[in-house]
Length: 269
Image (cartoon, rainbow, N blue to C red; front, side, top):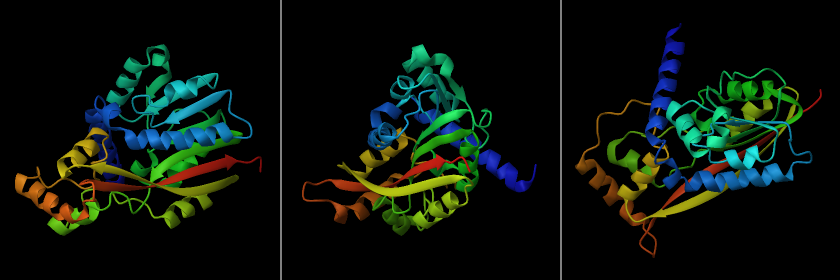
């Protein structure tokens, strides 16, 4: 294994461990995931030929969309890189327990051209190389199949990201892709047509502590960089003070998410 491959494997282990810790609290904090799921379900319902055979849920988490998808196809399979997420999904959806497996989106244990639709809600931002991941997803699609996915884009986590950079000069959230980078990855796919649209979501918090609790609850505080130790009370106080000018008239601080909705159609070409 090369040094680059070793680093990548280590990062994926860290991602899995990170989301393992968020598995039980995920459903209490997943407002963004549910709003993005509503976007995806709207697209799913609008497909000209709704998939009725096999649907793959990539990054299924604790099964947020499992019941919805399983009720609309003959064969549903949910995959996630975090074992605790799969365990939670099996616990919450016992009737589908055998239809959840732990797997990596970059190496799907799925044969070529065997899936009608791939559904992926807020997973692609954790992939190291979006072009490679999308190629792997479309590999499993039958002709006429779709990838429906949401991902976090650059401009998300504001004003928190700006404040954290000002406080300690570091960036403690992942660098999210620019729209142009996502478009480039989509354009590299063979025998496909694609569409990317942007959607903004805003959520309000009474304090920085509540904001961080929410981000920890959904695993969104993961960073590709190693943490520089635990954050002190002084650091948190500095972040809270820097966020004060961003309070709205109601006394809340809004956190912004810039979400990309991806639609890929696999042609017969």
